Length: 345
Image 1: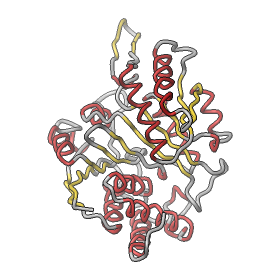
Image 2 (image 1 turned 135 degrees about the horizontal axis):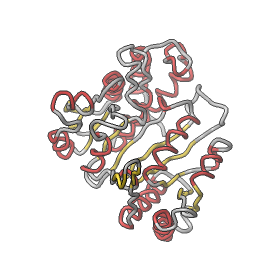
Image 3 (image 1 turned 60 degrees about the horizontal axis):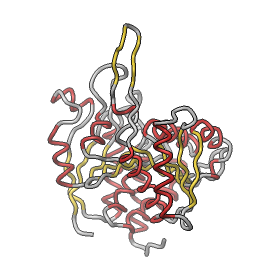
Image 4 (image 1 turned 90 degrees about the vertical axis):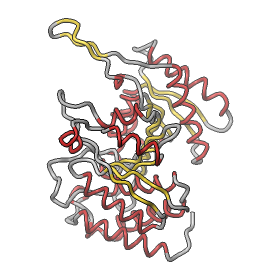
């Protein structure tokens, strides 16, 4: 793979720690990357008065790819989420979050292997809120045919490209008949060209929540609106052991940003115990996006080997006593070993 420029966004809290671990693993796996460091989130807001400075957006547009750590967003006040702005400004309409059981870290929910495809640009995240009277706030849910068709088509194409068999649209169209009804109808229309190749069905979001915690193996690709996708992806991460194991990616027409789905965890920042696996797996997804399937496979297999055979280096959230550095060192070592061997599928 030819050398690529990738924007590196450490973020806030534990972000710099887990991003550094992911960077080391990527470099050990083989691809030639020129990293372009930039600041986003609370650290950028303190320095520049903006959580997402314009030069960051410009650099991502130039490079086309970014590896991003978690950022801190104030609750109920303060600056607008850098994540939401990033997705809107770069038209990163598709959020993809694979949820797969990690060997050695099995949970009571059994084997899980599903993918959440979340619309990333509208819904209640449009941020259209108004105080219509003292003590009365309205939040406007925006669902459009254009965005709904676009994300549905993406989900079906993803299913085809990754050998998936089924796409399930998640909604609440029994209550929000127009908004969720439009989303569901768009999914039905986009499913038609894939008949005979990809099975399509739909489910109410509350029913999905119940079925996920009883038998998650019954699902394959889940297609969701923005808010439902945000909530369900965290629930699904709990099925495999927590947010520290769940990678993520945001795709748009011209750019892609790869990030773990967990937050900045300021309570453990600087303690050296943050779990970097989700960030490392997100970086593996980035390698695949860059056309380096061998590095993608090396990283994923290295993580599986370490979680299965090296429980001594696992971080406290995984029941171990290891550090961020220790588990990163172990994965780097395993990646380097695998790099000297042929890569199988």
